[in-house]
Length: 243
Image (cartoon, rainbow, N blue to C red):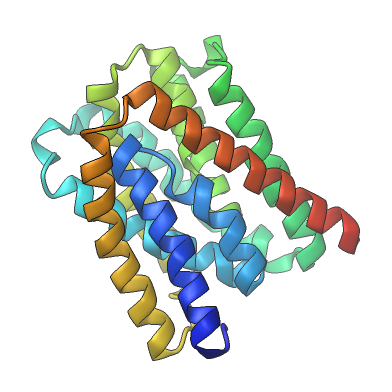
């Protein structure tokens, strides 16, 4: 739990950054915020708060784009994630914090690099690809708070356009983070911290919407991924130093 207004404001600043880039680029809350939240709160509580906030910002974005969701395409992804989320929660609850930092940092860093290079994987196509991506994403989301890269890789290999990806990713993000919270519970924060997080989510959604109209999409996604890579490597280094 954070202590004092300074810590609560720092927590809010991290959530604000994550919410802004998510609303701007369609991806990125957990990639940007989860490593920082883990460093601020501890690996376990940080991941849980990331799940909570990422689900909320996905719901905000989905409010204006739900008509573009493709339910038939999302069923295998969501179903596979629902099965693997409890396993991710079980693993996260049993790993010592240094090992969890190492695992989280490594998963974020590798996943971001795969997305940056647009890796093509034959196994991530068709129904089997959707099940594999959903299972990997659900596990990573529950264990490390970062389920988006696996979904992004599936979308790349399935040939989705950006317009198809964003609303479906928001729909998926809402559900998979809800599954993760059901498996692990909600974060234990004081009232000032919750106020800071709530205000940051709303303000971040507004800022991100304005930025989306001014920043080219390709540039926005590049910034998000580079920030995520920096966060993943920092978390990995912290875990290695504490082993």
